[in-house]
Length: 146
Image (cartoon, rainbow, N blue to C red):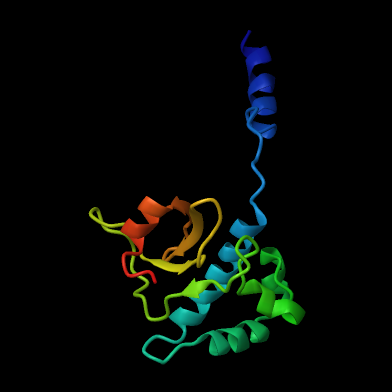
């Protein structure tokens, strides 16, 4: 019986234990890519004035092989800054401290969709987390949103 269990266990692990992977939406992929580039840019520009234009220049200088895993093309950086769901530029909260969450508060949201879709917005936080928040959760996480 033990001989049969070992191959079955290996097969179950190799096949992912029967769980299927959920494909990320285009909105989730895009905000994650922009967010990861933002974290790199922001951490290397602490204490300096930061802007969308400077972030775009920074991304253009990132080697193509480092952008490819995020699906980013240097020839189309402008589209990275626009949500595919609401067609509006992402709101980037330059200067937000990149601090880890505490027991009393989650990590700060640094990028979010301006309006999102169906009452939900994609957000990216200071430690690389991506979440789709409804308006109530969003208002709690980003109370100063305009």
